[in-house]
Image (cartoon, rainbow, N blue to C red):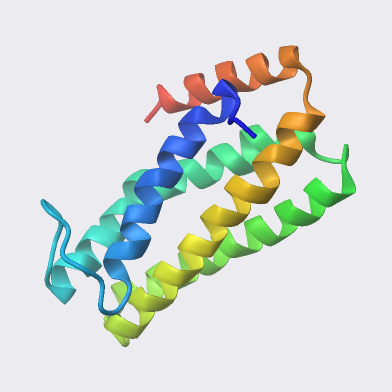
Length: 151
């Protein structure tokens, strides 16, 4: 299914998130213009979380979920999982900042973030596209654009 334009900004964020996920997994290849040391990757992951992921998670939870909440049991169930994963990622970033087992923590974040993004792209977004009318999708797109302009 082709992604509706209303969800493009979130999907674009997901692309950048997948790059982070691959970068911080153990044994990852080198990426041009991205850190290659453990410390550099750690700092990049924390900075990316603070500048990108927090806003993205808020857009999903406050903008996207507010439009679909209590309209479809499968979507509500997926959002429960997604919100729990947002909280787990936050905990892992806090652990990463404390310098506790940095490589294993980054690896765990990388795998969790990748599976989280795939779940949203492959399961959640198609369900939302089928649920919302064209007018609601346009409303969603406008709300996400307004949210992005605040970053």
